[in-house]
Image 1 (tube, rainbow, N blue to C red):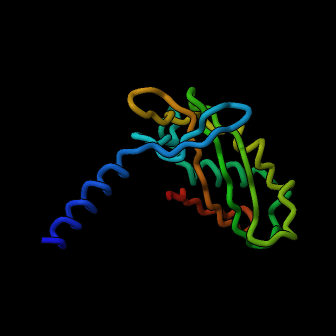
Image 2 (image 1 turned 45 degrees about the horizontal axis):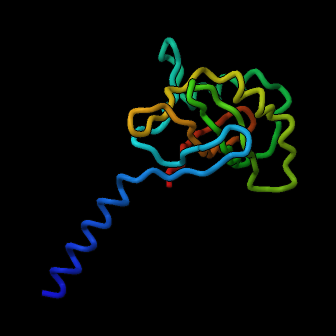
Length: 146
């Protein structure tokens, strides 16, 4: 009987947690969600360029990184209620790597609009974390979810 009661308690708590939003306060833009009913989704007007293809195209035009050492970049983006992206934070797996040649701020600001995240039917600011593995102008992109 005790096991059955514990099982129901676990099930009810896990369902309650699954439906909750997770958010933090940003001093500039206000509330930013890290979990919402519907997360922000990368979009493009002609739908021909997906997130990875966008970075490949951007880095292909950037001759400053042609001979850069392979590295992994971790980018934290904020997608606002209108779908515009901004770079909140960036780091590399090797602290000696100079991130300036990557032109990350320009890359993110030129990005096509995202489909904004929604929570309880309202558009919200949303945080997205991307992992980029680069080797020269070759790049692979993965969106990290927590």
